[in-house]
Length: 134
Image 1 (spheres, one colour):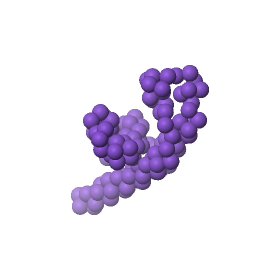
Image 2: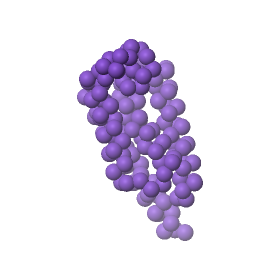
Image 3: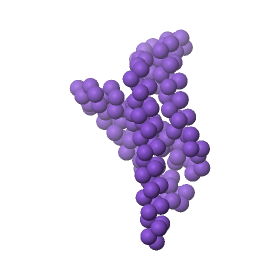
Image 4: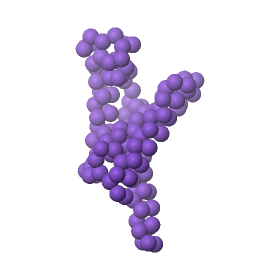
């Protein structure tokens, strides 16, 4: 894929993932599984797509790096970093940092990372197949 076209595709993917995250956060409070887990699975591909908008060359380990950032963020939630920094639990900085630790969130981040590798593999296979027929 050409770099500009690549950025547009990842931008659209990021927008779609963001909108799904927004819908999950805003309106799916009664859907415990979706609210608790799917949002955490999709946040890693969302961050990956945002990074891919700005660069075409990435190390193959970039999804793992993004997953590691998610895990570190989760660890800061375990230690209640928001409280250590003096933020109220309902403040914007606390919401962005996160306020509740869960082992399940880390599993969801790994699932999101696997999703990235699977999607990239499928996209690469489709592009390769198309190039063979051209």
